[in-house]
Each structure stands twice: as C-alpha cells, then as structure tokens.
Length: 390
Figure (cartoon, rainbow, N blue to C red):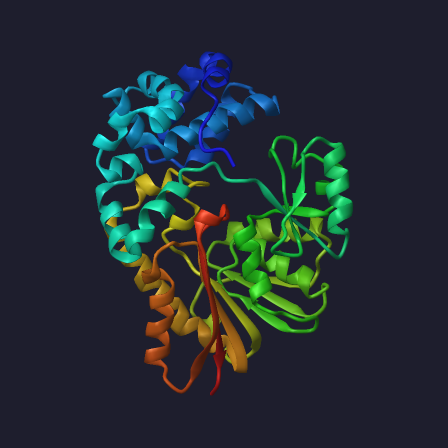
C-alpha cells in the first residue's frame, strides 16, 4: 500500500491540470464542497474522459487533502501551487528530514488540533499509529457476488483485464485490485458479478450471521452496499427491508439490486416515525450502520476531517443513541441487532453499546463485538451483535 505519490511522475504528468485542481481545491477547502463532487464537476466541465488521467488527477487531489496541514507547514503557504510543490517533496521530507520532528503532532498527522486532542483522549498511545495509517492511500477492494461467480474465477477474469487482483485471506468474498480505472465499465461489473466495497465494510454483513429465509431490516441502508451483501449471503431467499431517510439513496439501491439480480430487497423511505414503529418486533436481524464521524474512512474521504467540528460529533453521538434506542425495537424476541460505525472512536462504538445495554438491562445482551483498525489497511470499523431477550 502506497502512502505518497512518486514525485517526478506526479509533477511531470499533472502540471497541465494545476489550474483546474486549484479551482477544485478552493471549492472543497474554502467552499465546503465534497471532494468527489468537486472532481466530478472538474472532469465534466473540462471534458476529461480518459480514465488514466482522471485517476492521476484524483490521486494527487486526495493525497493533498489527506496531508493538507502538513503541506502548509512544509511550504509555509496556503497557495495551491506551493502546496502542490510541497507534495513532491513530501516523501523525502517524511523519511529523511529531521526538521519534521519539529512540527507538533497535529501537523505531522495533518489533523485539526481538536481532533488530535480527541484522538489522544479516546485512543491513548494507539492514536498516532492509527492517524498515520489514515494518511495511506486506500486499497481498492471489490466484493464478489458469490451467487453468480466463484471468487477465483472472477480474479482470473480481472487479471486478464490488467487489474492485478489478489483475494483477501480473511473473508470469503473480497478481492483487492490495483486500480479503479475502468473497473465499472467491465462486462463483469455490468452483469452484476461484483460491487465496490472495502474489506472492513464487507465484514459487517458477515458478522450479521444471516441465513436464507430470514427477515432482515437494514435500518440505515443508504445506497445499499450492506443490504446487497446480506441478500447475496441469504442466496436471495427471505426478505430484506431497506430503510433510509434519504429517498434518493434508496433509488440508487434499487438500481444496484437490479444489476445484481436481487429481488428480496424492499425499500421504504422513512418519511415519518410510523415507518419504524410499524415494524416493531418483526425482524430476525436489524442492521444499524448508523451515521457517524466517518473517521474510520478519512483516508478514503479526507475532506471530511476538515469539515468535521466538535459540535457535529456531539450531535452524531446523540443521533446514534436515539437510533439504537428506537430502531432496536424492530428486532423480534431472540432476534439480533447489529450496530456498526465506520469510526475509530470508542465514544461512537463500544461506549454507545455499553450505554444502550445499561439503559435496557434485562432486555438485551451483548453476543459479540469487533473492532477493525485502519492499521490493518482496511477502513476503521466497530460492530456489535446484540440479542433481544424480552
């Protein structure tokens, strides 16, 4: 896994796009726009269709966002052109230059001061290694739809297409690839043989222990990555009710389900509280992949760490608690709730579950929990499986 660009290649190939990148940088850093949306606009308005060029531009842009504060310290400037030049110096600066140790930790880790303090408070001596891991480039990983294709067979097909795939040893459905360029235009993707999904995210559905014929509720389904995985593990037999407050996300889920040839997912928009109340006591499994800080995926969405503020985290913790309290009632007696967050912080994971169990003594019990660290190369995740006893 690479942490930084090769300096000469980056500078030589991207110098024609510096002005374009500077505009996108301003949209994100000053305008608060999401990085992926800013890049989509850049590619669309400048008619950049070549996937290799898109990939190079996106790689540079995200490398800069991950390391923005450190680049400012190295360059002594917030001007985009100088930050870009500093990026080319970054590998040597980090590896060989003693002056790096003169920067305070929050600068070396390229995070806001308040986030550095929170990380130390919640994670102690593990904070620096975890934060460093979040500066790495994410490894592209796909999930094989096992109903349609053997993993080894898909790996062979992708190898012939130049993706240099290797199967993940720790789960049954993951394949890492060398690039996302062209990954969504292959015949294999169009025919529903795979989805893009990080290894840690794949572990959540596996952790649910679903079986064919079960009734499952995905309470915060979004565009449905985990719903689709659950359906595949259930062999497309049973029922999955995918809920979300974002109707547009559920439309995307329906399209993805059609491509994957899945027909057991029913989407329901949470327009009122009645939607959840009507499902009380009805599910074998309730998956709650709740809104969170996204700190576990900062390497994938580095702009998020610059947008996040302490009040946001306070509000998110309150929302997590409310969802866990209300949505857990959708589990049947002896059913399970799986709570998950893509966060590195115990206050959003272990502590939320402990508080929930303390509030509901005798009604729920913890069966299992798991923490995945970004140091492993996967996204940072926490998951807990809770049994409803009465």
